[in-house]
Image 1 (cartoon, helix red, strand yellow):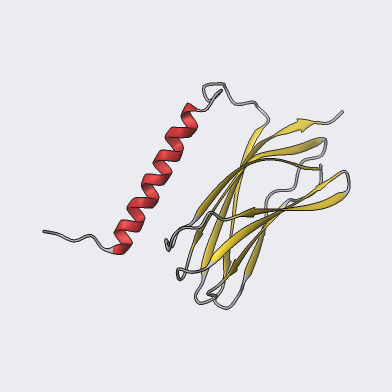
Image 2 (cartoon, one colour):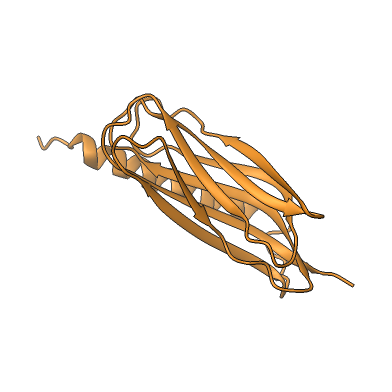
Length: 158
């Protein structure tokens, strides 16, 4: 009888989770609606080198005459070692005031691929560039790769 390596098992669990979330999203109310022409989605990533407890990346600069409304944030970390717990900090500027929002990570029970998805309502002014910072505590051994995906829409300002 063949055995499955721990790495293959983790990869299979990760793929199963992604498939489940995609199927669940398709069942969400309004999923069949056509996307607004102002619908947007971005992804951004960074690497935390060994010994570092954080990494920061920028999204995109918001076009003139538009305000970004962020509705969903998802992030994924590829851990160097289990035991590291993370969180994400999303920083936007609204009406000239910079505000940061913490998005905690759902514990992964020792898995090396924790993810978090959060339904939010965040805003970003025209001409500003929202940023995402990733943090970890616990083990700082090894490099960790972090990826965030953001979806929402633009509102045209008058």
